[in-house]
Amino acid sequence: MAKKYGMVIDLKRCIGCHTCAIACKLENNVPMGLFWNRVLTRGGPGLDIPEGSYPYLKREYLPVACQHCENAPCVKVCPVGATYKDPDGRVLINYDRCIGCRYCMTACPYNARVFNWQEPLRIPGHSYGSQGVPDRKRGVVEKCSFCQQLVDAGGEPFCVTCCPARARKFGDLNDPESEVSRLLRERPAERLLEDRGTRPQVYYLR
Image 1 (cartoon, helix red, strand yellow):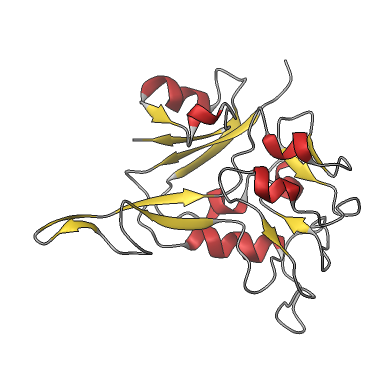
Image 2: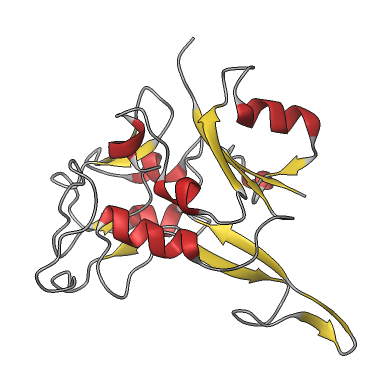
């Protein structure tokens, strides 16, 4: 059976430290001012602001990146085939083919993509990320790839490796023995905007 990579995020364990967002930028050489991975405050009016009124306050975090949808609307609207589903179920971008039309950004209900409006700015004299991270130039869309360069080499996404609370798990959703499959059997989970029919491959444990 073909692989279908997916991620499970335990919202009870997420502490909103943003380590995943920073780790993602470092490993994938994401330009300054852009983020592939964001940690939102669930229910509150802004970042790190709790929901409710004192003394009845609560704060929950919601990490959001590309959901690697099984029925990905971004793939359907790309006029040049730059966005595609690979054999392992990931939604990826061929940056050499991207023409910067941003149709995929409009189609994505998760606001998971960013656009290089200017020449990408990175820390001078430094090159982060593993070998195999593709360069992205001005005028293209980019997003989370589940750290394809690490996973294809037998590893896991860097956000999973770096999470201090061990809130993230990654694996093959088609393998009943994988940790992600086990967690989804044992605990209730939700997917974002399931009513859109996108069938995300990122699950959130409540």
